[in-house]
Length: 124
Image (cartoon, rainbow, N blue to C red):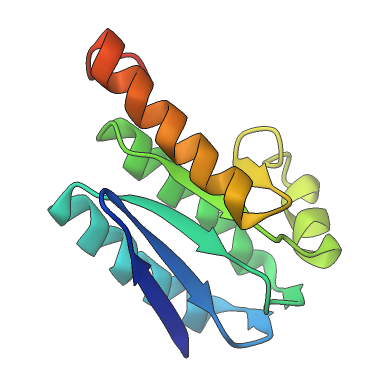
């Protein structure tokens, strides 16, 4: 998979550059999620270049759960209608943090980080 990773202070932004979310992309993002877990870093997945998806897109929910269990954030942004439809089929849209733009995803990660600092790590 082709992707870029932008590293910020306490989170990474992963931007896949291929047009379909498939099993190969899911496996590669899984590796990046595991790396983020090991480094205790939150993740934003910028799906701006991804126009379509197979049912493999549902693995994003598991990534979300894995990160939140470790008090880390996981946000998706620029989710195309086709991807959102696939997630809705499996009733996952309400379970995931999905934002229309990257700046909103950054805001969520920042706000959740602040909440953790203020209220203790077991808030979220």
